Length: 238
Image 1 (spheres, one colour):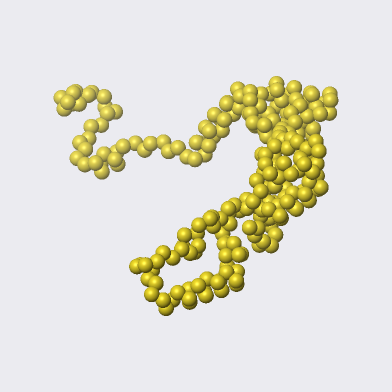
Image 2: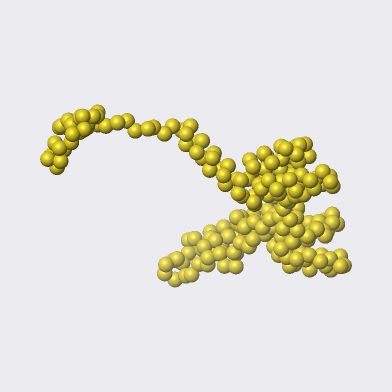
């Protein structure tokens, strides 16, 4: 390698022995730095190139362009179409359609509201009454009661639950309190007298008796879900 370097006859080539990495880095030519401005410029060129060949776009962009066609002149339509990534011919077709008919070529997209609601304030009043009587009614029970009261009523279980939840603000809540009869004064007094009667007898809880209390075993006292009015006073139905 050294013999090859010594045979160089070009006077412009200067040979210098590099002894350390520091000296190598000092002699190394500086690399061209890429600034943020250059990277943004390249990205814009790529986006413009993709926009010129793109023929489809999202619904909001299409609606925006058709809205702009009301006030834009013919020569401005193509420029705005390129910014939105819409084909220029498509934009001109929309612009001509508005100039001829006065209507937008692409209407604003709206969410499908579904089937029209068939329930009236009279139905709501009937639902409120039967729920106040029995808060553990399911959607099928409410529909059956409505059909008995009102003829020619057609509504599905899904529509009923949606109407109860969103229109009447009635939702299914899990019971978190015990029955009122369980904690009533008469019931508590009876249980207290029974305890005092056998307190000083020879009965032993671990020897000669079996004591059954609903507080421990909760036989037949499972809490069932019920319907409750939302956005009102804290009133629970049981």
